[in-house]
Length: 286
Image (cartoon, rainbow, N blue to C red):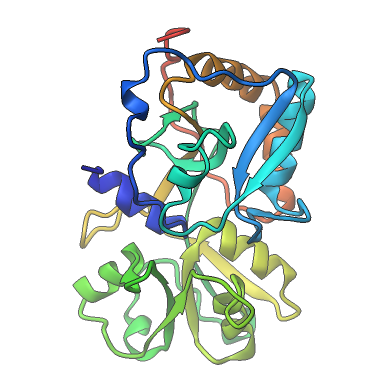
């Protein structure tokens, strides 16, 4: 059974990865990895994270790590839908998922390489200055939130608003992207005035707010929601197969060496960055 944290956080990051990896935890030996190949599992159409033209920040970080390790980068492209882990990492078609929330128990994780949070986005010329979900102005405004998965489940901000009795004037924006629905729609709606406020995962909000022709304000929400206890900030790791402990250790070393370069890439994409939590290095090979 998957953990509540794993389900919640992957939905929060705009990724629906809910199927377990059959038999992976029972492997007795580390899965082999071709030499000089950094094989990445990624979505071909999910900016700012990744796309098939390798324009996302996860693409750039993958290239950075591969160069550090003396490897070339190759990709297995699969939309971040139900079955993503099973069809990519679980099928041994690739070795690394570039963005998994810390605590997600279906993969073996590296140390976190960034931490971000949900943000509130408004038009600067509206002078709303909303920095908390307890702001009384939210009761009179039209608010955009993301819905997750096949069943359009609510993300933590929607639960947090509901816990405050803010149920009217909520507009859902799907994270299942296609030609009609795009990742930046929720931010574009603020710029166009279709909605007054967007509450969105930081990397998405920061990236599209930075690109907006209309000046937008962005406020980072507190780490934990007061009303629901749901986390609003998440540390993000690389994920590998449970048996790939050697690869996990190698990636941890590369992340440490390139931490400054990774931060520069994330800042270039407008990702709101929070201090990383203190980590205890995992014993090598364990």
